[in-house]
Amino acid sequence: MVPFGGWEMPLSYESGTVSEHLRCRSDSVVFDVSHLGTVRVSGSDAKEGLQRAFTNDLNKIGPGRAQYTHLLDADASVLDDIIVWWIDDETFDVMPNASNTSRVIDAISGRDTTESRAILAVQGPRARQRMQALSAEAAAVPRFAVQRVGIFETQCLVAGTGYTGEDGIEIAAPVSVAEKIFDALLDAGVTPAGLGARDTLRLEAGLPLHGHELGPGITPLHAGLGWVVAWNKGDFRGKAALTAIREAGLNRKLVGISTPGRRPPREGCVVSHLSHKIGTTTSGNFSPTLNHGIAFAFVDIEHIEPGTEVAIDVRGTDLAGSVVTTPFVKKQSG
Amino acid sequence: MNIPEELKYTKEHEWVRLSGPTARIGITDYAQDALGDIVFVALPQLGESVSAGDSFSEVESTKSVSEIYAPLAGKVTAINGALEETPELMNSDPYGEGWLCEFEFGASSGADSLLDASGYRALVEG
Image 1 (cartoon, rainbow over the protein chains, first blue to last red):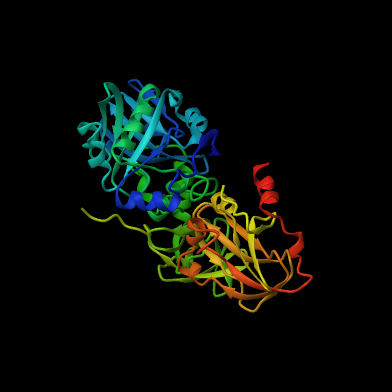
Image 2 (cartoon, rainbow over the protein chains, first blue to last red):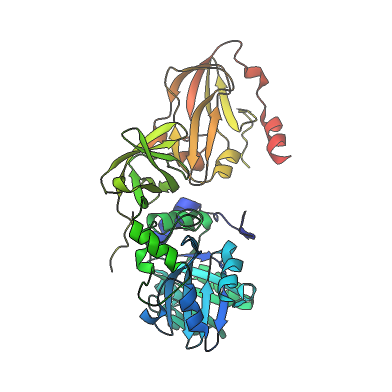
């Protein structure tokens, strides 16, 4: 167990990070992600409040759908990246990263319901099939849909979301029934997975992690997430600063780097091109699916082209690599 | 915790199998468990001469990196090339297939300061 944002979390279970990771790519795993925050925002003005706070546009979706969005600081830095579950007309569950819940509440003034529920993420190509043993209804919640579903005669919220690059669902269950659901998932053949696999899975899937690829000094544009910004919806927090940055142009951007050897690149390593420093890695590890190193890095804008040859300095050893498009691992179709 | 009786140990969680003038070394069961899934081993150089306590190899897992210190003074006479493609052998069989390298060592190599199994057990189990 390791401390994480005020929670005690398993880094891995019995079978280990690599095995859990591969199981998610080939079958199914369950993560206990109760550490994510939940802020309930409700009322007739709830939607407009969220529209003014966040970058994405809720008018692209509707009740019963989920949306990825950002909360910006006044300087357009990403304060947090968030999933919003639009439950019904005037009810939203806003889900920040663990350590950012209070900042998000400051911005949108909802009610922190984190303590009342557990969240289980069931992910992998066979996640839905195995979930049918517990609830066919929950297993069928479509991608990015949000539905109220009874599981073991207890009302839960189920969304077709996740953070692994695989199909799957996330279940927000009252604490009283969460352990029973977790145990039933294991009985149905789902493998428990810890924070270690969660990190390598999201990295392979090219998904940013706040505090690494997002944070102070990093806007959605720097992180390559311009699609999260709805320029035409009216004003939102940080929009003026973000507009100025867009007009001035970016001087650096997030890229994926693939290193063909097994030695894992790590966070905070200098990236160079022809012996000149061009950037710094923000995350890096061994990719269990690809059997070589992968990393995210912010690099100078003139070196972001896929195919650019780079070296990553890992404690004095240069790992040769090249800029690649992300995701590093694409979901198998079908 | 698997701590074979016939081996010697270091405080840095390496094991040493002494046989005549050579010693085979690796990392202990305790070390592999603490590191988690091992994904890369920077093998020592064949023929390299090292002093006891030198950092001469690195083991990387999905969560961290750990340096390996030479348990004895001597010359590296064999390396376990299987670790290049299957470093997970260090996890699955730390005292067998997951060995790191072999040393040829001399009289004043430091072998008499190694821990025996009960000394090492006291170290890791407190």
